[in-house]
Length: 302
Image (cartoon, rainbow, N blue to C red; front, side):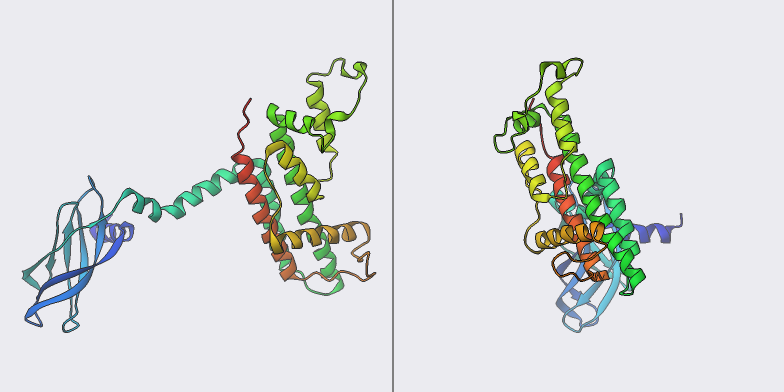
């Protein structure tokens, strides 16, 4: 790698902060105030030796030069005036500054971790496909058929995510099983069975509970929310306009699947445009991400 390319990479990787300086301006021939962008340095870090530009406030002159700085010192030399040396305070950074600077990187790592989970990844892939196909949606009859299919698939993706997430979590949490089976509100644990039904069935109560959960219609998000709140202690419902949009779309999905897109109340065909589908995709994605993060933070005390 050439020195010029290496230097460019160093400059791009460095963190820069504006600093006020006082120095003798060769053009003004006087002591003036000015400013310069300095690379941030850290305790026990390496010495930085990088090109800089010093701006003079007095006569609005600018001078190219080089800064050599570490945690303890900062000296600037001007290219065309080697006799002028500017000494100033180093631009010291802290670990917290570094964390803030790298926040995007940490968010990217978190996203990769989320995408490594199969249930979340499956939902994300579905919504990505839905958004890609939404660009083909117009208001003609053929496009509206596609729009109805995309809306139905979006709600189905939500339903599958909620079902798989809850069932997998409950399956691995004895405490969640106890809460669901013991809830008087849900009444899941009140079902009666013959002793003969338990013969040869390992973890009979758990098995029956999971059978019950698999039979739940998870597009009824109010009912699903009750299961998540009792079993895991979390609320899955979005708020405000997002909740209204999701609930409206669930009703429209029923019309699309069971009435070929005809509104049960008005008798008219639903008209679904790109903006509606994209808004729904965003609302569902935000909802699912929130649920996924809450479930990921759920700790099951055995």
